[in-house]
Length: 130
Image 1 (spheres, rainbow, N blue to C red):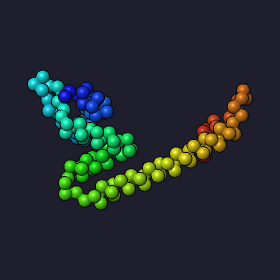
Image 2: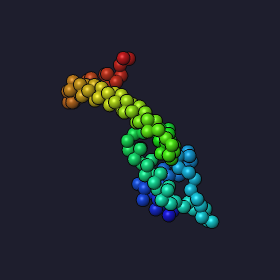
Image 3: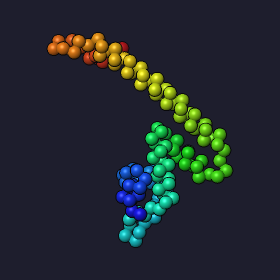
Image 4: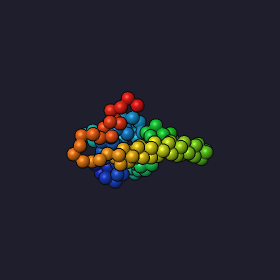
């Protein structure tokens, strides 16, 4: 199948497929005599793996590690679990940071009169040296 068909079948855009190839996440595709990329089920399987991992928020570096483990039949599941738990810790930190941002903005918005007056605690806070 060509890159458009692979994109449709995998849920990964053609642009991202090319990018994943360029960084080595996806092996370079076979080419026809006229130079068009050709993809098979193996490549689709890898693309779906990458798509699912991206949806879970894994970085491309971590996805490369996971792909390497996925391809290694002698892998230890402990290695995969270590990567997953490290990602969980990172997600928890991001959630904490986002929660703080939300709470700060909600407080600032509650302090803002939201009327025709020019004074605005949101802008004052953003413009402060703190």
